[in-house]
Image (tube, rainbow, N blue to C red):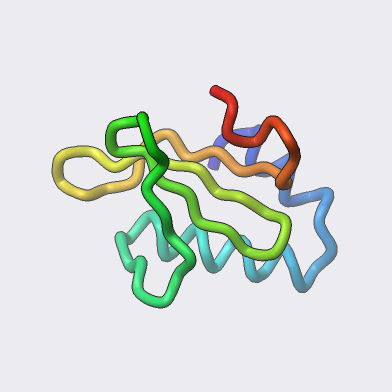
Length: 81
């Protein structure tokens, strides 16, 4: 996992960290069933999954694999790229 994601996870309490790590694992293997996944408008192959105030933004390559994973808390600037 990239350093930025690891730093973010370290700031979370244990229960939330476990939930987010499980979500990240599902994203990496391509299991999106039951997740709050939405395609972001105006951005090709860009999606987000949310869990409470946490947003996981990622892109899918042509084979449906997640690339460029970002994670952040929801704020007014979360979707401004």
